[in-house]
Image 1 (spheres, rainbow, N blue to C red):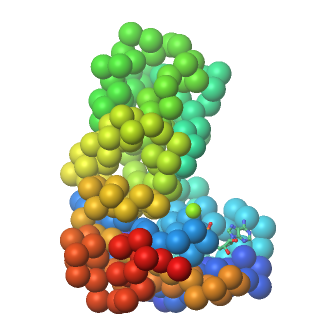
Image 2 (image 1 turned 180 degrees about the vertical axis):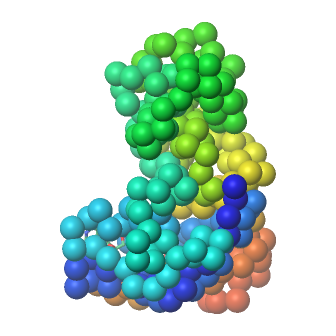
Image 3 (image 1 turned 90 degrees about the vertical axis):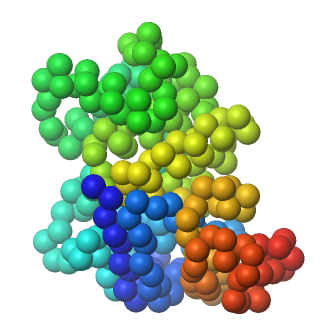
Length: 259
Ligand SMILES: Nc1ncnc2c1ncn2[C@@H]1O[C@H](COP(=O)(O)OP(=O)(O)O)[C@@H](O)[C@H]1O
Ligand SMILES: [Mg+2]
């Protein structure tokens, strides 16, 4: 649980288009790392390379390495399906399976990985995952009701429970609060703060207060212009990125003077 990610000279392509250029960075275990930067600078693209989701797009590929506790996820013979169970992903819009019960939603990822589990083990896993996602008390009396009956914020915590149930080492989140109201956002932020005790958490956010509130380290990405690749400009403890950044571009962005 909670592994270090070591990215070495990663270039990310969509066909001929170089979307993200030459990223080298280390992402710490038991910490929250935030990716910030203007729209289109490649935050989502880069995030998806960390669990090999990028390559499901036709023509998309990477060069370079992503090491998870020293094991290169892109080495020959590595099964991307196994990678995706080690490195879970939570998306912008909560995406529970709408007709599936809350209980089955939690177990969906586990079943996808074709692990068969006994009923009592499943009950335990459902409870522990929902507890870890700070959702148990709100749903324990309606586990057999459809996931779509929950509020947006509850649905997002259900999706987090679903990724926790697989027992990943890393949880990636791409703007997990951008579709949520402020109260639900705070609930998810509290949860993110708790998750880092056990997981490596990486979160993309366009909300700088959120990055400041939840993350230990922040990576600022930028693009020189349309059609140009995104690059990592500065990566440091969050306090430093917001209070005394080394690069002018970072300062302009975090102070809202971007453009
Ligand atoms: N499926 C795709 N096919 C081709 N280009 C894409 C695709 N998804 C994103 N891009 C391009 O990659 C660049 C980075 O996009 P993205 O990773 O979505 O940025 P961000 O998440 O920082 O807003 C953009 O130029 C975008 O148009
Ligand atoms: Mg994005």
